[in-house]
Length: 84
Image (cartoon, rainbow, N blue to C red; front, top):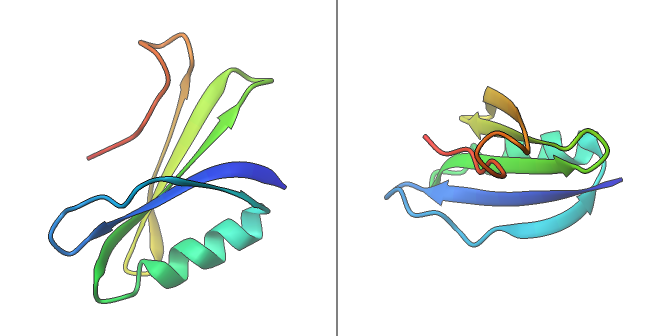
């Protein structure tokens, strides 16, 4: 289990407040695939901070499938919060 930050973007482009959840990667995938298929959700966003690697990884899902993944080191202009 890891601490993932999860949020959604609604059909009008508004982002929900990010929440931190302790999940396994399979749980993250199931949540993101299911929530991103709801008619009131445009995208699901997930980020994970890896202190050992000093990196943040971000994923985006839309329509039930993963549409992007971004990973950046923490020394690259601060911590990442991927947005399109």
